[in-house]
Image (cartoon, rainbow, N blue to C red; front, side, top):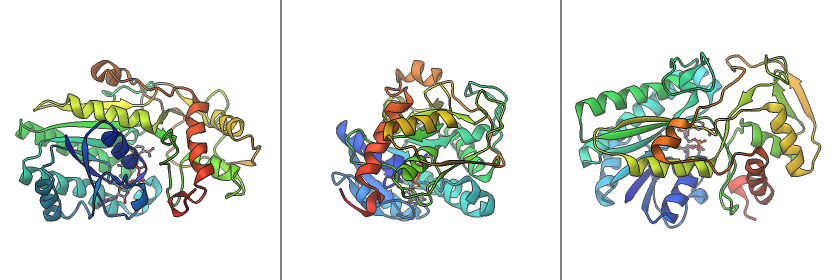
Length: 331
Ligand SMILES: NC(=O)c1ccc[n+]([C@@H]2O[C@H](COP(=O)([O-])OP(=O)(O)OC[C@H]3O[C@@H](n4cnc5c(N)ncnc54)[C@H](O)[C@@H]3O)[C@@H](O)[C@H]2O)c1
C-alpha cells in the first residue's frame, strides 16, 4: 500500500515508518518538524515538510503519491502545555486532523489510523480499562484527541466508504531493537527516558511525583507498551479496515508497573545507582492506569512481544547510550 504518515519524524511515527517500509509498503512522511527530527525519517521514505493545517498541500501530496491509507501521529503532546495553551492544542490536534480529513476527502482516500490516547479516559472508573468505560478527559490534550474520535465517528456515519481506527495508547516506551531510532523529546517528560538521561549523567537526579498513592509501594502504576509492538498493531489495524468501519482499541500490555518498579528496572539495566528524589503529587495524575488489551488481541490477532519491563528499558538504554544527544549527534 502507499501510506502517508503524518508526524512521521516524531518518536512513534518514525518507528511506524520503518516498520511499514520493512513490511513492503511505500511511505510518504509529512511533518512540520516543529518537534520532529529529519534524521529520524527513514531515507527510503519520501518526505514533505508541511503542516497538516495546509489542506491544499496535503491534497497535492495525496494525488502525487496515489495514497491508499493514512497514519495520523502529528500532534502536540504535553498535558501541562495543553492546560496553558488550549487553543494551540485544539487548533493543532483537532482542527489539524480535520484539515487532513478534508484533504483525504478531496483526494478520495478513505482509510485512517489515528493516534488517540488513554488520556481520553481521564480518571477511569475502573481498571483494567476497557474501551467502553466512560470517557471524560481531564485536560485539553485528552479532549483534543477525544474530539477527533467524535469527528471520525460522525464522518464515517455520513460516508460509508470511509473507515477509521482510533488507537488509544497507554505509555509508549523503548526504541527500535537495532538502535537506529529512539525517543528524543525536548523537553523530555516521559519516565523511562528521564531515568536513563539521569543514569547517563545528563540530569542530576530523577524526580518522582508522589509516593503516597493508594498503591502497594505508594507510587503511580502505568502500562508501558514497547514502541515496536505499538507500531505492529497499527499495521494490523490498517490492514483490517473495511469500508464503513469505526474501530477503537486500547494499546497497552494489560499490566501495570509502579514508578518504583520502573526505577529499579532502569538501575538494573544501566548498572547505575542514580539519585532519585520524591516530590509532591502532580495535579491530575490518577493512581493506577492500565489497559485491557483484549479487544486488540482478539480482533486484530495482535499481541505484544515485550511484556517485561527490563526488556523494554534495555532497548531504550541501547538508544540513549549510542545517542546521548538524540538525533543531534551520531554514534
Ligand atoms: N508517546 C506516548 O507515550 C503517547 C501516548 C499516547 C498518545 N500518543 C500520541 O502519539 C502521537 C505521536 O507521539 P510522539 O510521542 O511520537 O510525539 P512526537 O512529538 O515525537 O511526534 C509528533 C510529530 O508530529 C509533528 N507535528 C506536530 N504537529 C504537526 C502539524 N500540525 N503538522 C505536521 N506535523 C506536526 C511533530 O513535528 C512531531 O514530529 C501523538 O499524536 C501523541 O498524542 C503518544
